[in-house]
Image (cartoon, rainbow, N blue to C red; front, side, top):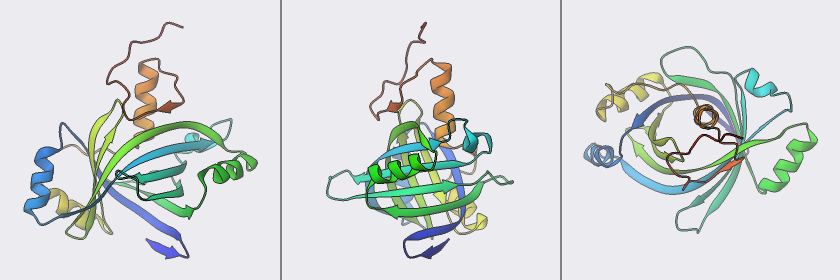
Length: 206
């Protein structure tokens, strides 16, 4: 990806897989010499027009507030993601910009006709592995996932193989789409989903 004065522009190349638990994968990461850099808690807020223009075109607009688990550092980014590209891996255009104030960014987006649709928390642990970024994610309701991001498909597939994940099914769907599907199936209308949301919910009758 290219970087221009705090703006990151490029194509996201990612292998995403569901995990039953993370302990075994952490052991494999350490075995191949991977290093853990940081762990964070994110608040991800997605924006769209009242008519859902972005969602209908498979695009996304997100403001993310990220704080490390020690509470000593935070950062805010706004990200645009284009439509999903063809292929086995999840690839799409990504433009990301660091901003100072999430609330001010939300006000700017509102002035441009974009309002918040849904927000959710996520825990993410970052690892560096053989030239790729490996992220261990925990999401409310959905559970544990791993994402491997690299500069080429070949690099991503190689790390996936080294970690013994080549037999695990790849997921091309974004977290927000998976979460929206779960919420719809279980009749949950909450606009903010915290990390400690219970794993199951009773379908509402109202």
